[in-house]
Image (cartoon, rainbow, N blue to C red; front, side):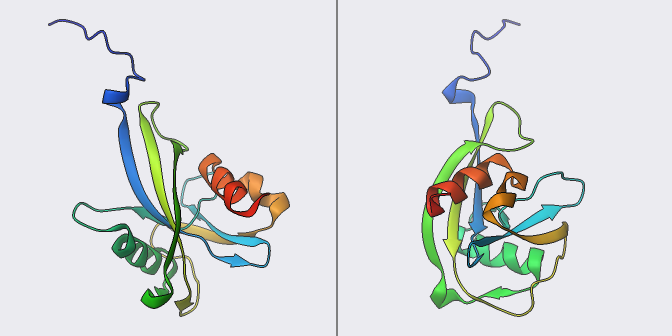
Length: 141
């Protein structure tokens, strides 16, 4: 068996993890969630399943994680951001498609979510690095 000459950062070997994420603001504060067993907060959302669109994924994920329904006519895509994911292998990048939109229901942690928290600009260091990058890019923090 021959060893590959590819390094672990060879672009052909990088795994892309596609996610859909929701950005909800209350003034300057950003809704964030922390999963059980994690030390950082994340923008709510999750992986896009095979055959699923980002728009379908965000509606499903937010309902599963926070127990609310996103109002389809209010969903607006803000952008897609890519980078090294928190607690991800070096050969994986995360590509996050971010949405805003209104919801119906009462926000409450569900499924794998241990805690939800509104982070102020001074608390955003508690977010995983991609969350910090996205909120800084979108809100000039």
